[in-house]
Image (cartoon, rainbow, N blue to C red; front, side):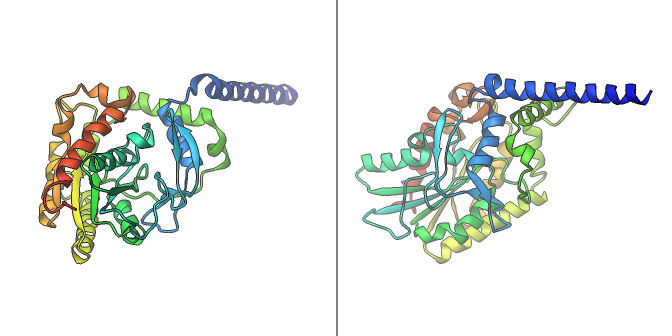
Length: 328
């Protein structure tokens, strides 16, 4: 009896191992075509990021990393930015602009030269202005992390202008970072299955949809996440005022449905905060809403802004930057 039970357990374990190995092989060599959002974000975290020594930042880019993610090359410089090497001290340029933001700013799924930061550089150049636009975006950052980065590192670049690119999930909390397990650093199938299971749960088990989730982060304007983000905006505005730096707060729209935008309440909260702290404000939705939403996405399941959306965002930011007090 015991031998039969032991034999059954061993057979089951061997069968499960075979299934697991087969699933891993299928994921790596069939499902992973380089454009699967969950897998590519996992590779980004594994191959490009590191844990920060600052708990308010949590994670950051590691210096001099290279990966091919979502169909494009992703390279960080020696100062951990997805940008060319830029010295702290200003050179001959007339204007320096520091872009703060998350994966939209860093240019997820977009070649670095197509990001709105680099497009704005070229717009200035076409107008005869020697400007440097520094892209400090990091995927999965929120306002607290972006401001902390600027106050501890970004200020060293001596920008004339800081642009805080605010996205609707910026009221999320900073989650303490822990090193991933060896399994989660190597298991493609684990990431793929977890991602698909989460998508199915949201679709069939009554999970909040995307716009309800984002609105829940703000509530009536007194939700903790938004209050914390608001306080970070105040800290940034105070620093900029004290150091004669112009501050522009830009509302980057969620791109699921720009024709029937359901998150205007969040834009209004951000606009009110900009007015309260004496910062300029621009809502970028008008630059995007005349285009079918799906034409603005990196891929149909991934509504990060593609090259077209970056082009439109760049124009909106450039129009705002040219207004007083943003003139170089």
